[in-house]
Image 1 (cartoon, rainbow, N blue to C red):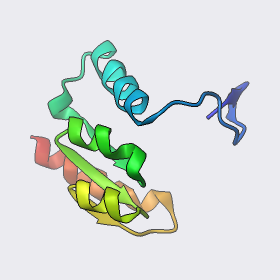
Image 2: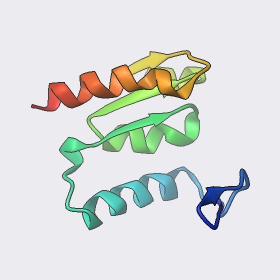
Image 3: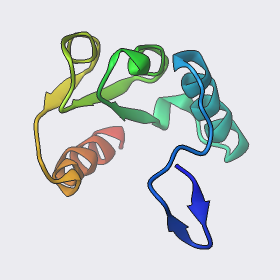
Length: 95
């Protein structure tokens, strides 16, 4: 998402493919000293499959069949905040 000032403006800042998405996430974790074992992914489509395969836990959110099949769990929710309990449970399971 593109950021203008301190706000997301709802437009796409950069286009990249599913492997770029995975690689960017793995690079971000490495740059911040976070082991992949302490990462999860949330996604909704086929473009999330490489990332789902790279991390130990993943959540298919309002997802298509391919993402649901590849993810560790799946939920359908209208409010993105509804994933917070899943994230909290995932965090507890890490320790």
